[in-house]
Length: 197
Length: 309
Image 1 (cartoon, each protein chain N blue to C red):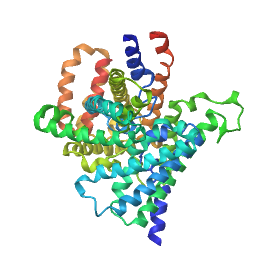
Image 2: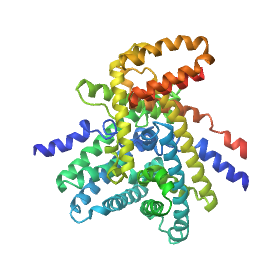
Image 3: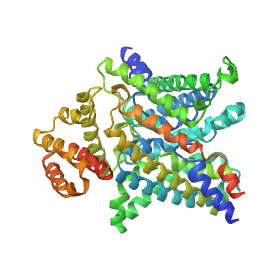
Image 4: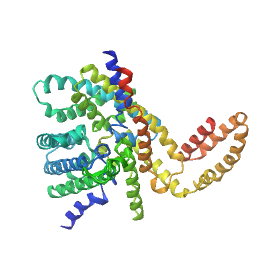
C-alpha cells in the first residue's frame, strides 16, 4: 500500500512530469519562470489550488457523477468547481489571511483557467484513483511543476546573460532550452517500475 | 465586406494564435506528434471556437460584466462536452489519441481569449468569421508542427509511410521534439515578422484571457517584466552578434563611470580573489546605486558568477 503511494508520488514528480512530459501548464511555466521569486510564488499557489481542487472534486465525482452515470459532465462540473473554488479561496484569504494573500494573491486568478489544475483533476478521475491516491498524485504533480519552474528559472537567468543569435532571442530560445530540459526527464522512464514494484 | 475579409484573414497569419499571439501552447505541443491527431484537435477547436463565439456574441448584451468569465467558461465547456460526445460516438480512435487534451480545450487560451477580446465586443457575423479564421490559423500552425515531427519522427505523413522506419529520428516523437520544433518555427516566424518591421511574438499579459481579472499586483508584475524584456531586447539589438563581454558592457550604454572600475576590477580579482572581495563589494553596491534597474540585475548576476569562480 505504502509503496503504491510512493510509486504514484514518484511517477507524478519525475516520470510523468506535468510540464516537461505532459505539457500541462506551459503558459505559466514560460510566463512566470523569469526569476526565482515569482517562480516560487506561482508554484506554491499551483500546489495549493491543485490539492484543494482535488479535495473538492473527488467526492463530487465519486458520489454524484459516477454513481448517477453523469461522467460526461465532468469537464463542465470540474471547471466550474475550480473557478468557484479559486474565487472563494481568494476572497477568504483577502479577509482572514492577509500575509498569505499578499504572497499568493496575485497568482490565484491566473490559475483558474490553467490547464494544469483541470488536467490533474481530469487525470485523477480517468485513472480511477481513490481519494488518498488522488491527493498524492496532485501533490506530486504540484511538486513536479515546482521542480520544473525552479530548474527553468535558473536556466533562464543563464540565457539572459548569454550571447544568443538575434533571430532566436526571446521565446524561441526559451522553448529550445525547455526542450533540452525535457530531454533530461526522459531519463526517468522505466525507473519507477523497478524501484517500487 | 472588406472588414469581414480582414477579420477572417488576420487569424491566419497576422495574428496567428500559436506563432504570433502565443496562445494555446499546451495542446499545440502535446498533440502535434502526429498529423491525424493535430487535424482532429484543429477541427475540434474550430468547432468549439466558432460556436462559442457565436453564442457569446449573441449573449453579449445579456451577460452582466461581473460574471462574464464564468459565463464564457460555461458556454465553452458545454460545446467541448458536445465535441467529446461526438468524437466518442463516431471517431473513437481520435478521441483516444487526444486523450485528456480534448476536455482541456475548455481552458485553451485561444477560445477564452477570443471570447473576451473579440466575441464579447462584436456582432455575430464577425464573431463567427473571427472564430473560423483563428481556428484555421491554429489548425495550420498545428499541422505545420506535426508535419515536421511526424515526417522525421515516424517517417510518415498522415500515417502513410514515406521514409523507411529504420531512418527515423526518435527525438522528434518525444516531448523534447515538440519544444524544439515549435522553438525553431517560432524563430522563423519572428524573423519574417521582423523583416516586415513587426515586433516579435512574446508571451504577455494581453494574450491571457484573465488579464482583466488580475489583481493590481499582477499587472505591476507584468509591467516590470515588460520593462525588463524591452531593455533586454534593446540590449540584444545593441550587442550585435560577436560582442564579447567587455564590449557588451560598453555597448549597453552604461555610464562610463561604471565601466572603467569594472574592467580594472576583473583581472585583479582573478589573481587574488579573497583579498579583493570586500572592496569589490562596495564598488559593486555603488554601481548598483548609480545604475538603473536593468543594469542592476545584470551586475548582480555578474557578481554572483564571479563569487562562484
